[in-house]
Image (tube, rainbow over all chains, first blue to last red; front, side, top):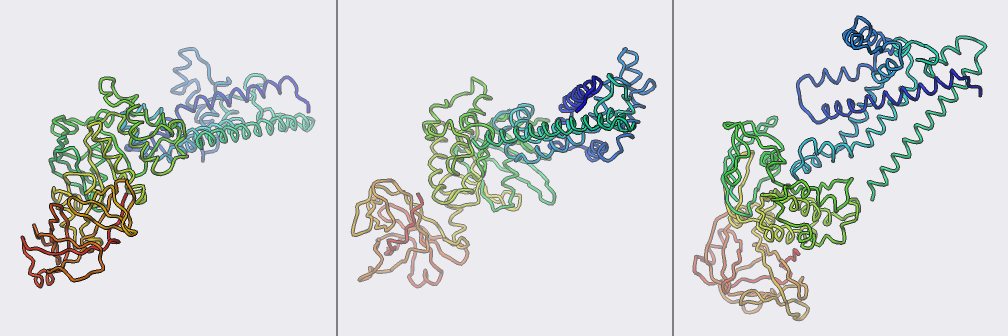
Length: 228
Length: 351
């Protein structure tokens, strides 16, 4: 296995982006799942379609929309430009791209977790004197932990593999915005770099295996705790 | 406790329209499934808002469309005991018990955990997870959790329906004793007349989303005598029997009852169906039934095609059930003397 300094940087960046995207999306994902599962409001269906849209759209399309939104003339881009925060073609853009693409997976898993909570547990908590936010923190959050973990793992793994949206909003700048998939793409386009590409592929497999194992171990731990 | 309620709630095709005022410490809400009992529980506890109307508990307004009041469930201080125990699966027994207590204002913490844990005999369960408790233990913890929230009112929403008969009669004394000991009034919701007879003083009867009547458990049992598969159930709390030729001789007021299915020393509760009592005009010469009681008819009532005969046996009351033609043949009227024959095996031990 051969890894040059650019590859190490790509691996580091991939992990950083995936971690940041998951952390960024988690509170929003939890709040949205809660809204969808427990609240009745007009336009719920529209919200659900919007949340799930990135799941069915080609990532390149999402990247293009993000570029329009975050670019110099976009709504958010203008604001950011005025406050001196560059986003496009930085690692932050890669985080936003990954967070957007993986978001539906996160919300879906948390939703499944929340839907499995017996409504009467929530009613019991409220009637015992807990305000809605108290019930949210002490009953809904711990009881949907399995869904949150599954969603986070999925989201993290999906972010590691993000390509289409990232290359459009963050570009493919070695050492700056080049993540593992982008680096592999570079290597794959030149016939002399097959070994280099293969090395990064192996690293990808390794990281994925670690993510899955960690997820399994945490689930087992949760199982043991609830079987006490 | 005084509960005044006048509400309307529509759920799909079902319309709940209840107007009632009840006072007392032990109130029952009786109705078949689909009569709106559960919806009413949700409205009173604040888990569902009515479309319109008002709910007052001891002169405090919990809900009123006219005044624009809708107290949130956590501010109503009405704790619920559900059909299933609904213990929080991620918390220990102790943490479950203290969930409501910790959220109760300090000035309202009248009931102390130690006293309650003692009364409900929960000490050995405290450090266990809730997954390893039996059905009866779970329901005891759920009851303790609700009581420790120091509520103004306990809503017992069919708390015995998920338990088998043996457990049910083990839990009833706990339900009654916590309420008596700590002075918490309760609303007991059920579709069982027997549970109503054992648990409450007054009953609100719901029928298809409306209040049909307010009545007493005894009156309810009398009215349903003809349709109910076991007729009217006479309930007898008996204790300290003597063994007598393989039977148990229980003192019952100034009488003695011979019962097959007794239990030494302990107090037991027996049910005796009104249909198991045979009435004679004169003292029979010999009879296989082990209990032959001389009694006086104190009252008679109609329940569909049947006649209920209220008998006084040395001051103790029993209800027997006969058909109209039998009443005519025996020429029974209030004040007449009869002999009631009851087999020793007709008494069913409940707990």
